[in-house]
Structure formats: structure tokens, C-alpha cells
Length: 335
Ligand code: X2X
Image (cartoon, rainbow, N blue to C red; front, top):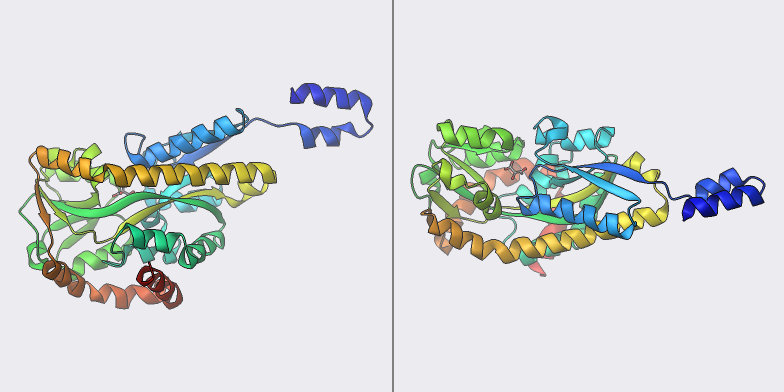
């Protein structure tokens, strides 16, 4: 239809070539990187985004999803750099994985900073969220919307953990973000950084004793089947996802397509956040049914973990930015 209009214009108007480019809707395809596949809510968020974009652009814009960090050869902490450089057009990434390049994102990893879902929403949906998006944008990537990997819980193969002393000497797989090294060291554990791709093999062989991930990841990846029979629900941090686009790719898009992509990302993100939260209790029940021993911390036990990780704030708040941390804290208190 557009092509027809275009060729008619060509015969009628002088200088039509220019007009032609203005009215022709070129079909375009973009790569979207994710760490987890569509077996997980994270990958489903990407599929949903692609679906909405396909539908709303009437097939003009295709988002091709590449899961399992394959565009960065499994090294999820390189995803942000690869997107900034244009090796990846778009991504739905975890704040943890992008934090080596965007230190402000460590806000979400501060231990026991986010008490509940309302706190997460108050931060992402308010001034602190805008400050974080500005920080991303200042590094050559355009952020569009939030999603959610979820509150991260601790599992291990050795025994129940309900106080910091239980972590003493345990080898814990952590993501390749330096803050996690500090948190688990403060707790007396022996943290080992590795990518998600290497995590399950390391749990299988017993090279590490434990790991931390949201319930959806534990459930879908069947982490209990690699000997992780103890799970502590400690909600020590929430791991949001961010939909984003390389800046140069973004600038080649007409404004209406930018809006289409942004709105589809917001809609896909809201859909995925709601689904992730709704599914949490069923996932926990399924995990327990498979024989995993679940520990829930009482107030006093929780407080012992809070106190044991205070040094992380001293080390990291200056890097995240006092102003951002205060703004987020105010939003949480006012939620
Ligand atoms: O590597 C992990 O633990 C995962 C899948 O949760 C992230 O990418 C942050």
C-alpha cells in the first residue's frame, strides 16, 4: 500500500524521491538480547515486546530475540557495552548485569534496601527511577521501560540458613558484579563470580555450595535438581529489568516508531511484572512440593543480616551517589 502510494507520487511530483523516503515505511529488524529464554518471565517479556511491536507496526518492525546472552558469548556483564557499541540493537537487561558500566544501578543490589514490591515501584516509578534512566542515557543507551526478574532468594546444598553464621565458608555463586562479592564476603561466605551459563554446571559438580536467584529462576531452571535442597526467603534485593535501545539505532527511528517501541516496552514490562509477582506463591508451593526445605526469616533474624551487611553501604553508597540513594530512600518511606 505504501509502495503504491509512493510510486504514484514519484510519477506526479518533482523531487518525489525525497518524499518517497518520508512516506515509505521500511521494514526493519532489530536484535534484542536477554540472559534468560522464554521459559522464564524475563524471556517472555522480550517475546511480548516483539509481539506488540509486530502487531502495532503491522509487521514493519521485527524484534528478533537472542536469549541466553548468546550475543555476548554468554558473558552477561558485557551486554550493556555491546549494546552501547551497537553490536546489539536492544536488550532487556538486569540492573545487576549492567551495573559494572552504570554504577547507579547498584542501588537495587544494596542488601535489604528494598523491603517489598511497593518499594520497588516507588523507586522505579518516581524521581529515583528518572535519575537512573538519566544515568543510562548519559552512557549512550536509551532506556524505555522497567520489567522484573524479582526478589532474589538464597539456596544451598549444605543446610538451612537463618543467620549469617550459617553462611560461614560456604562457596556461593554470585553474578559478575563486584558489589555481590562484598555482600557475601561481609556475611562470611566465600563468593565466586561466574556467569549464569556456568552456574548450573558449578552447582552440579559441587564446585559451589549455593547461589541466589528469584523464585521464578529457581523453579524454571530446576535448581533443586542440582542438589540445592535448602532455600532461604530473605528478599535481600530486588532485581529489576530494563528495556533499552542503542542510541544510534534510536536516532534513526522516526518519532512515531520511537513512541511505538517505547509504549510496547512499557506495556510488555507491566504485563511481565504483574505475571512474575502473581506466580510467586505457586512457584514457592511447587518448589516445596519437590522437597526443598524453605526457611523464612523472622524479624530478629532479618535484622542480623541487615547489620552484618552494613559495610556494603559504606563501600557502595558513594559510588552509587548519595543523592540517588537518599531520593530512593525517601520514595520508599513515603510509599
Ligand atoms: O545470572 C543470574 O543469576 C541471573 C540470570 O539472575 C541474571 O542475569 C542476573
